[in-house]
Image (tube, rainbow, N blue to C red; front, top):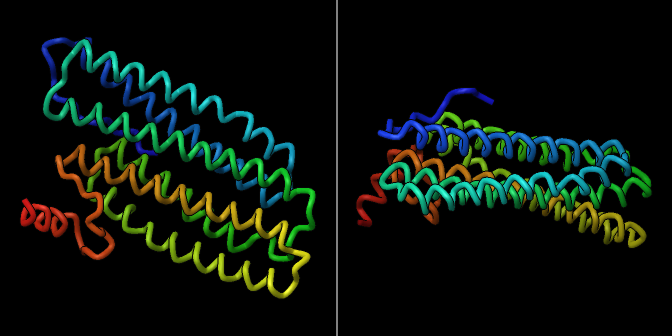
Amino acid sequence: MADKKIEFSHHISRQFDQELEEVRTNVLKMGGLVEQQLDLAMKALTQGDSDLGEQVARDDYKVNSLEVAIDEECSRILAKRSPTASDLRFVVTVIKTITDLERIGDEAEKIGYLAAGLAMAKQPKNRYREIRNLGSHVKQMVHSSLNAFARLDADEAFEVAKRDVEVDEHYESILRQLITFMMEDPRTIRPLLSVMWVARALERIGDHAKNICEYVIYLAHGKDVRHIGMQSHASLAEVERKLDELD
């Protein structure tokens, strides 16, 4: 992940600057932990490692603990500092971002549980190739969304958010394939339902990564780009022009 810092406006209170920077650092720490959880969950699935899957599920409390700590610090800043303008947008963005990171952690926990169960079943010949591909796509989206947050890069956030449509298409393709397999051999229904839930978890992680990107754009430009259908626009500037027309 890039190690550039969000350029906060300088305040009379140096302590306030330090508090905002500490919050930012903790968000990136939480993001790194979530990325690790997702990576290990996918390894547990594709390697048929039940112990690793169970470990991922057990470690979800670490993500939850960071969410609580960051949320409490944001609440303290709101009460003590009464931030305005870009500072307020930053705190709001952090509160929303850690909620989505916590939910990504929940989905990784779910994949861990499912991987532990599937480790007892016979691995498919392709070793979950399509699921691996979807997982790789989603992991890159999460990483890039955190990169955009770290660099306050709205253009990168826009490009990452647009890639969610590819995740949705890949997910739907996997569902059709799994349903076909189940129809051909009803004995596979039980394990393939678990695989289907893994695919669903990955699709949801893509949604959460997209949400984080939308928050970054809000933080950088003060524009709420939710529900705009970004994949149908060529650039962030085009989205902003549409928003200006709606005002």
